Length: 501
Image (cartoon, rainbow, N blue to C red; front, top):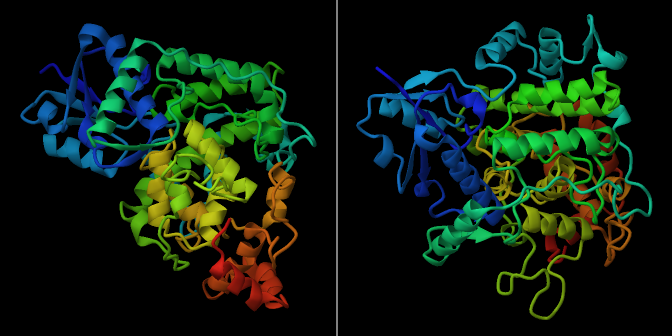
């Protein structure tokens, strides 16, 4: 029997196409009733519809309410194993022929073999990453790592240039919108009016690749223009430069528009040619071949209920209104309230949520050390935060966020993903961003009207989480500092009553 390849919305690139007939389904139930970032839904729909047009007569493109309308009763379907538990249940219920997953450097079998070989040891990302490099030969010089070290993190923590508004790099190569994007905007506006979906975020030009050709162009532009500066400044933030030296290809990669091994080979070639330093190339390779693959495998290894069943630090707070509204006044949609006062006074949180409002994206340190740190300090439920990250970020998927949010950011899994909580005071924000200079709060002050909510929040978090962290050797110094804090009770009481951030 001739099989029809049923491709999902994250399988839109050429490496998911083996040349036969295709089925592509745009199912409105996937976003009905959800609150999504406008840029995310625009990108998804643009990518699906561009792929349908590119495939031409080879594709059966179905726009339906439910997947069942397009697939039930068919016995000719073939599927590359999809990337979520829900989708995998669907394709098995339908009875489709299942092919091994694609879109990652390593397979589930690779990870299972590695995990089995650990014989009781922790499944550390760094160990996984080194093993993959040894097996693939990526950034290896014989048996030794290129540049003499496996990890160049120590060299990649430079502060943003003092007094600069940006890194001074040319802007990224933006995609050009076309008639499909116009059609998508029209449909989204209608669905929003009809209550099919609730959207937040700016209606702005599409900034992320929606086709394989656009994604390849974005990758080439990154390698030529920004890769050399990526390593040194990958953790730095400037309020006037939302892209910094980042690649912006996580979204098209998670849509399946770029093969990650192809990405790694292209970046490594720049190092071999002498066009990019090893610290930038290694840092980028570690994000794609190390961290991204690791998150993918942990999604399956840890189980479907990982995001909802882990809450080791006892976080009980609902998602804050400022997160749900992306720092906007719900009645006006503006970053100021009806009295003209800022909704958020802390520059770091205001700037990060404003960037997320405008673009549906922010880089990893803004996610981890500003948004994640703030939620961790205030005890936001990790399952709610995880879903928010999935729905608000253009690159957010059910497989990529749990390990990053529940594990690494919120330390809700008792140290499976990260050995200590990623909590910090305002000193880190002051060192790695330009946000503190004009802020009304002082990152050095923890008590009083000028007390920084990040600095004071750090101590309040330690006070709340101390019992759960008491046996963590990496938290010994921090907890010792907490015990010696003369104004501990006052700081905790202040943060418990704080209503302005």
